[in-house]
Image 1 (tube, one colour):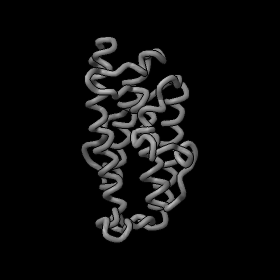
Image 2: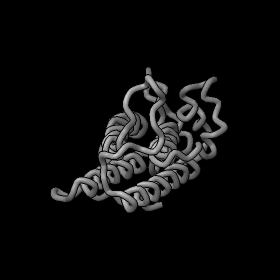
Image 3: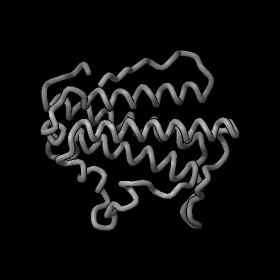
Length: 178
């Protein structure tokens, strides 16, 4: 598995800049998990129960949730459609235990690919980042997100978890330059 991480450009249009930063941090998370054994992916840094394996699965869910479910209003796809969210609101994190690195990385890579296809289609039809996503928020739950909000939120989501990944990875094998 080869993961390429490129630095975002210093100059680009808004969509290009947001996508470049999102792609940079997508690759950062995948690189933080690369080279570890399946058992190491299940290791947490106390007192947290976060693991790099759980992070890969969580981010695959977040990709599908924002780009497919919200942006295009598709129904949840497997495995999210049958997940026992009522029993465990953090099912995406916890259900990664025991999965292989190959399975988890493929789940995230596939989710990223589908998300990019969703975004490409939406932007090709209408490049306005201020338009609302296809799935409106329920009444009384606040404003409906815009395409711009989804892109900025996804950059924020990956950046936040990249910091977690740095700490978890360093606690596993001392790596600080991944």
